[in-house]
Image (cartoon, rainbow over all chains, first blue to last red; front, top):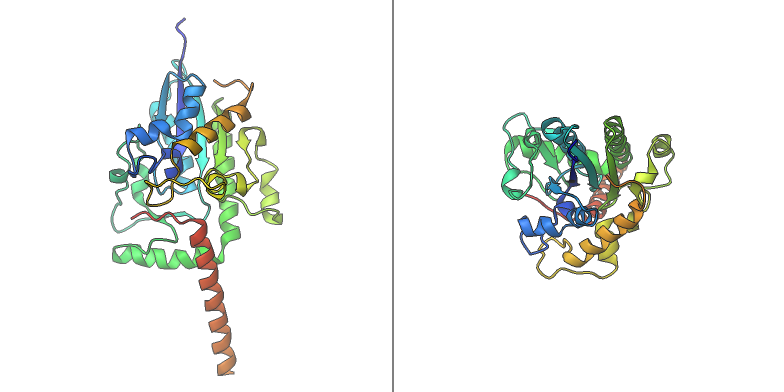
Length: 253
Length: 32
């Protein structure tokens, strides 16, 4: 019997894509130096897929992983380990009814791309939208986001749970981490759900100061090449090492 | 009555702007 290929799958937002490490939004170099890819190398993966997409919401991160498995996974030939970098919980995906979107052009170095994202407007608070419907949607949901942050966090914890259950159901090993603010704790409504999280596979799940971006930002790391404050090689290397230590002897693949 | 309603509306708008600013600071990454 031939040995299964060790496949390492990295999914997340721009932080997991290594955006702006070399100053560019996306490039093969950025992806190769991202914390996820560096972790894949530490774990001796045969093949690394970085499917992270800049600007993603947590809904699309979870969905892209499930769709990657649907389209690529072969249990007879592969052993997959997944590294998930959750993003800010104030980002939303809202169905785009008038026209499809195109986020691929800003993510051309992705090793696999989930086109289902094009069916949604990506609503984040820094963008007002371009076209009439998009502008209307953004305006409506900006208000919703600002006034319903607790509701968004409950949606977010459900994203985590759906993905953990999906991976567990398929007998896939993984590690999760936060790249930005995730949960505002303590919170009596979140507590209803957080009991169900498998914390042994979720690095610093409840500590926003330990999230990838803010930890190294607050520690004074800067990337002179970046326009949007994304980190360069060093914080990515440190994050990969921290995740590697966290995984420890829990069977990698 | 009119003044009270106007003041409450203004207060809500100020709170909204303040919270929006805080959240934008938390997620400064803008993608077009």
